[in-house]
Length: 128
Image (tube, rainbow, N blue to C red; front, side, top):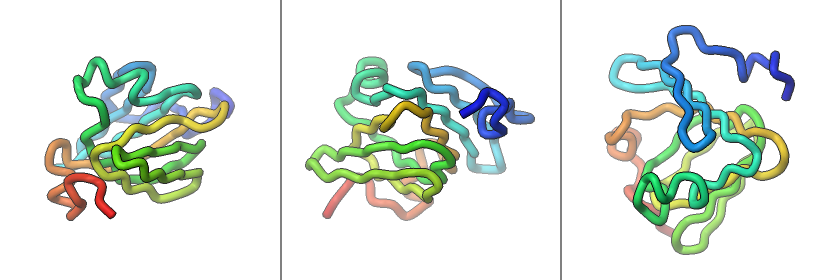
C-alpha cells in the first residue's frame, strides 16, 4: 500500500487516535459510529491489547468491510474465521484476531459502541 492510497488518507471530520499501534478514525453518524481501523502488519489482539483491556479475548462485536489486507480470527472454542479483502465481516464477541501477511489490514466498521450486539441482532458470544 502506498502512503498516497486513499484508504490511508486523512478522513474529513474524523477523530483520530492510535491504540496499541492501530490507527482509529471515528466519525459519529447519529446514534452510530463509522470507524476506519488500520491494523499494522504483525498486530495481534492478544499480544498488543489484552493487557490494557484486561480480558483474555476481545469482547466486542465487529461488523463492517475489510477494504485491504487479511485477518485471522480465533474464538475461545477454537473455531477460526479468515477474511481477505474485499469482504464483508461479522465477528462475534469472544475472539482473538491478527493481521495475516506483510500488508496492513484496513477495516471499515459500523458500530453502536456498547449496544452493537443488541442493535445488530448478533449473538453475545460465538456459538455453533
